[in-house]
Picture (cartoon, rainbow, N blue to C red):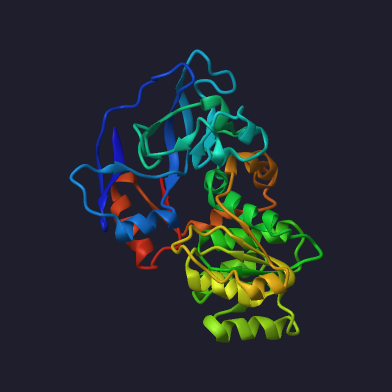
Length: 343
C-alpha cells in the first residue's frame, strides 16, 4: 500500500510500504477513507533532523474496518470508525478517568512499528479502546467534520473545557489555525457569548466569526494585549485558549486573562519556560490545558456533528489525494492552506 513518511525537515514522501496485518488479537485493520495534515505535523516538517530511514507520519484518520482480531468486540468488518490521535486500551485507571493520552498501554501513531494515519490503511492496536463506530454510511457528506473528532475539534473542546468556558465566561482564543478556530466553535457550543479571536489571516478569522467569534484582534504582542483589554473594559477575559504553542502566544495569554481567570494551553509547546512568576501568582491565574484526551470527548461531540449543529469540517480548505501529501505539507507551511484533507 501507499503511505506517508517523513525523512527530515521539508522532506515528506509517499512510498510503498507493507500492507498492515493483524499482529495481536486486539488489533483491527482500517482502510482509510479520510486523513489530514495537522498543524503539529509542521513542527517536525520544519526542524526534523535528516535520516536515511523515513518515519511514518499522520495521526488523524477515519475509515472502514477491514479485519478485526478475535478479541475485538466493539467493531467488526464493514464498520465506519474514527480513531483519536493516540491509541489506548480504554481500561487502565487513566483511561477510566478520561485521560486516554496517559494510557499505560497506549501510544502514538507512526512509532515503534505502529502505522501512521496518512496512508491507505492502518493497523490499529487496542481496537476496542481506540476506535469509535460512526452510525453513518461511508459516503456521508459528514466525513470531514467527523474526521475533526480525531484531533482538532476535540482539542479545541479540551481547551474550552479546561478553561471553564460557560455562558458566564468571556473568552480569548489565540491563534487562527484549525485548532484555534475549533476552539472558537467549542467555546460557542458551551455558551460563551463574547469570544475574541486573535489572528491576522482574514480568510481564517472570517471563518472564526462564522464559528462564533464576536471580535477579531489582528495585532500581536503588547498592542494586541492592549486591544483585548480595551474590548473588555480593561479587565481581560475569564478564559484564554492558547492554540499556537509558542512562548509569545503564552505571554499574550497571560497578558489578556483577567485576575482569577484561566489560560488553557493546547498548542504543542515549543518552549520550556514561561511567565509563571509573581504576576500569575498575585492575580490567581490558573495555567491549565495540555494534550487533549480526544477519545474521552468523541462520544460527547458526535451528536452535534451528526445532527449538523456544528460543522468543524469547514476548517479543511484544501483537499488532496494521498500522493500529493508532500505538496499539502508545503502549502500549510507557506500558509496557503489552513488544513489539508487527504481523500
